[in-house]
Length: 555
Ligand code: TEU
Ligand code: CA
Image (tube, rainbow, N blue to C red):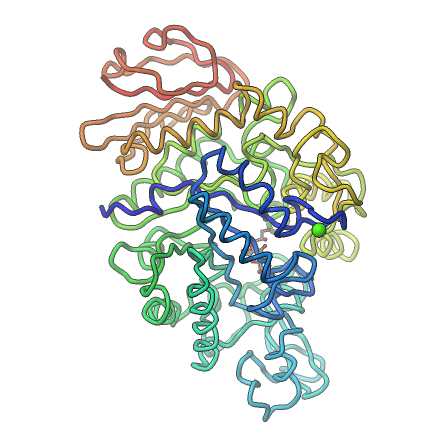
């Protein structure tokens, strides 16, 4: 297996709108990020993944881009960006940009042109089709954010495809002009000195030519057989690699929802000349009750099975990302741990241990290093996220599900849980802004904030800091081979890693009760590298406390 800096790194994801506001307008911005780089340096991370900062009308908070080479007004200027990049590099922190090129905003000049006429030179930059019949879209596909995936456009009496919101028309990657525009833009950012790309829904860029109705699972037809891992996706990524990626020392991660391990080896195989790693969702995308919406937790045995399959099947062949949450997911501790006061800290540390000791590049989503929790939503008008707002309309108000049934699912899974402001200190608005925040601050900021935790050596923050440091000291954490133990345990997640004579045992209790445990013989003389509980003699452990986690190095 090749050794590379991006396998050895820890990545920190920033959602700029909610990270730090520098000018009291209630919206996080680039100067705010720059002002907090020392905090990130102190944590010890190597790379920042910056969610989109490009010009955007913000229908989907920046994932709808109207100009790829300009900064969103609310976030600052290109000078602010250059300054942030320079300051990050001064601290040996790299910056990876979000690349959203499956679609643009409908306010992008390409789309403004495209919709003008069938003859416009930008017409084929997007995917236009005739309706099946008057007032009937070309097929039954549903969009990810609700409704049909087709929007009627009066000007030319045709429909355009949008797999997300109707303000996010899909680009036509089969048009070589589109590919070259995208590659030129990427080269422009690389020349600026950025350190890589996180590629938004990159597995969806190639669509089949035929676009038949999809199987109806929920409310609409499923487009995924025709739009995900489409016929030319690998060809286009190899072309991107040749024309852009191979020329720079950058890292790339492809957001590839619905990918199998076999497909992941194509996207991120060691010798494939496509991407460095995949970011796949199998462990966070179990079947919901209503589409993705559910209030149920995944059983631990299922979680272990999924995560272990990725560990063993990619070993030595392709590279994976490790994450519990991001800006589209509920907070890790609320979802996989226990966010009650009694167990929040210890379960947050347990989750961190479990993830950071696995094979793959770990991602920390802003606030996860503090054990930030889901937000206590009380009413519908607190939601800002287009997906949450549309889902409520579609499933409840217009749809078949009662409010009583849908509400707990919405509250548990809404993307807004991850988007409440970063909790910096105990002052008003958690120190995020001195203005009115664009989305409510979680009221628990007086107990959970960065200022308190950086000052407390036993905090979740310091635990993450220690995990990051261990990664730099023990190659087995990065390169070790994985083996799952106690596969049928419904409480314990136990595995080993092995590399070059070093062997680790990782024990994590996912339950709120004590569980008996027998230390494997070969670890009874081992050394404890990290633990979230006070135990004097790990060699003699025969009970694992609620949410306890520890890592033993074989001697
Ligand atoms: O998300 C892609 C994606 O697969 C989403 O549908 C995801 O499953 C959903 O948000 C989970 O609820 C990416 C971005 O990460 C997301 O923020 C964007 O909204 C989306 O693409 C469109 O660009
Ligand atoms: Ca601001």
